[in-house]
Image 1 (cartoon, one colour):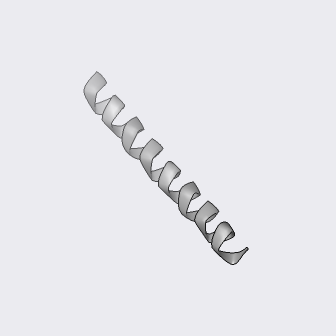
Image 2 (cartoon, helix red, strand yellow):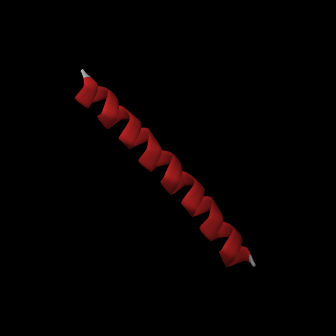
Image 3 (cartoon, one colour):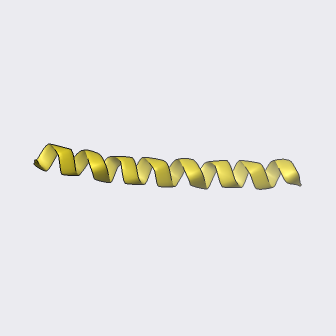
Length: 31
């Protein structure tokens, strides 16, 4: 149970990190 919760949190954390990272890259590229 705890492993599943940790896996889900890690997955969403990685997804948000990648999403914000790509958005920041787009800003730097435009500038």
